[in-house]
Image (cartoon, rainbow, N blue to C red; front, side, top):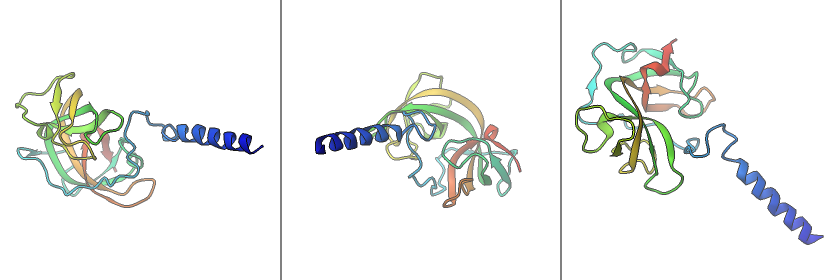
Length: 179
């Protein structure tokens, strides 16, 4: 009887443990952002140009329409920076180990090491200088897509509750809507 109980306990632990990554609705290969602090210092990379006439000027408010991380979609954001650049979705394996991160949005042109002024094409291999998440800086990445756009640094409180996020990098113009 004790062996059967032990076996059932171990089986239940394995089954329940295997479901943990899928319960968020995110692909298993995506990094779990729920335990991360999504705030940044607000520093921007050298060479990043402020947008001349952004749709959402600094100090204005907008609603986030993307769900890069839990609680973003529907959150009210205050614009703290607006910059014209190329935003890239990238796939990479963190330098700290772990599962590859697929289609991470967004790394901007100025956060890529030794890059020319030309927009990079999908499939191009690059080295990241971005440090948005553990293991991102110096990781080798592949460009999944590129979008010339205005990117925004925003402050927001997750729509699901929790601590306010300051200087979140980056949300593209198409991921915001008027209040």
